[in-house]
Image (cartoon, rainbow, N blue to C red; front, side):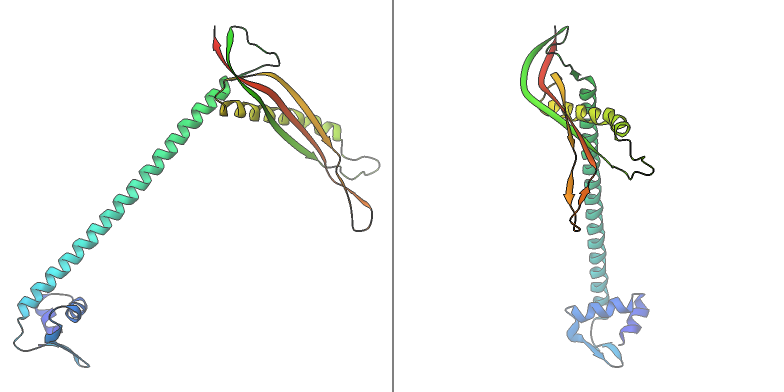
Length: 216
């Protein structure tokens, strides 16, 4: 009996049915020739079809199970990522609040507070580069104005880094804060034997001592 006739009679997919027969326990009962596949006379066709349907049901169930496992795994990873982001956001909020509340002073005490712990010297740095510019009719880059424009920014950044260092030590205040300034005038020899003047570099370091303070 031709497999295409069996497939038509039982309403099953001919291609899946033939693939199944080639690897099933019934493969000795089929003839897979040039004119198409046939099932040997006397074979229990209904039993073969029933076994094929069970095979397909099991395959489909396995596909559904794997798809569900993948969906569950994807959901778990998504939830883990969301939880991790939530923890990171909460930690960032706690840190930002602590940095906002952190007190700093150039002195060595705070009115109304007692220093309960000294954690040592810390520092924070920042720097900028200022192009020398090309003088035209005697007018070039006004380095002084450029520096003054940037000084507030680099001092603020240095203080932010100083607070970060104090927070990393578990402290909530910094005492004895002062600033050190650095000016570089870098030059290098060029291939023509002359001198190449590179941009000016201005740096600032905020120094202090990290402490833990408690209200009196």
